[in-house]
Length: 482
Image (spheres, rainbow, N blue to C red):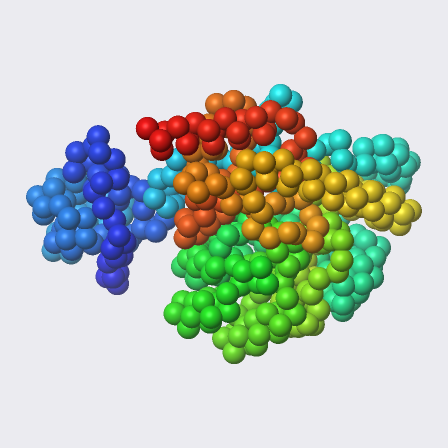
């Protein structure tokens, strides 16, 4: 059966790389889409006439580009039918799935730089706590206790749904936030990231639209690109998503999912208001939308905030959590709370993708939750973070950097830079001096946050961070003055 040609993006322009010839630019655009799997094996390419028009090049340029790609084996000509992507599946490369970004400041690079940084680097742009704020001694005590556990806990796979005593305890913890669930509605995962990955495997197909906040946690976008979803950004306000724009996106894109944080939103630190939550759930019901509520920073809250899952009763809201940010990123432990009829297929997907998982992380989390260690740790941590928030905000204020809102807890300050200062330029300046910043556009699907930057207050103790910021802003002002 003959396949329909895949349409190229109308915004495609041959000005992608001024050093390349027009033929090379056309070839690179085709190869980029094959690598990103926008064009899959067997797909028919646009006609020579239509591609020439969309890229503003001559038909002879497209003919030569297609001939070269065919000679390389990337595409195949079929006389009388056109050109088709060859049957060889290209590796999925996330960084090639959108127009080429400055590699030094794209979302995946920020994560990699933070993860690979040595002890001498400063990381105000990373999303986790420094080791000095983690309960290291308590973890060591728990590990010594676990070393005496039965052999099965040390050597065997976990049960498919995860350690039952921990799931029972999580039910009680969720109830404190108004979320009613049974142990059979809880699936343990290795992390919040794995939870979202499993849910995407269950609920969406390539090409499905998914709404995210703009700005949002940048790894949401990376995960959705890996699942080849169509990402739709909706502006975020201090009370939640812009509901008029949200309603418009529902009507225009018919999305399958919405992924968000209700409390301590990443990166803004905002908190969803009850009014917005109720209106949002009504829109979701009207349009058959499923919501993934990522609540991994729940224990950082100073005061409880509304939860979509509490209002909804886990009917169309899926609630996920994790202890990676608050307890240990080395002992990976997260969970999914969802409708009972969704847990069974999620268990199958977990087995298919990671088999049984381990029990040690779950046992450690359970032990620290039961003996009160975790509660005491979080009480102390919240107090320390509140002090760090005030200190960081005061230091930034002296440079004309102001928070978008005053967060009700957590580790993030979403800040506006002084007029005319581009966060990407600050990030590049910082990289050369061993400071990893998180510029606003790595969080923005619409790329409209160039004047914003996210600061992790827990990682801002190093005076060099503020020295570097001050020098970068001064250098920018000098360039503008010249």
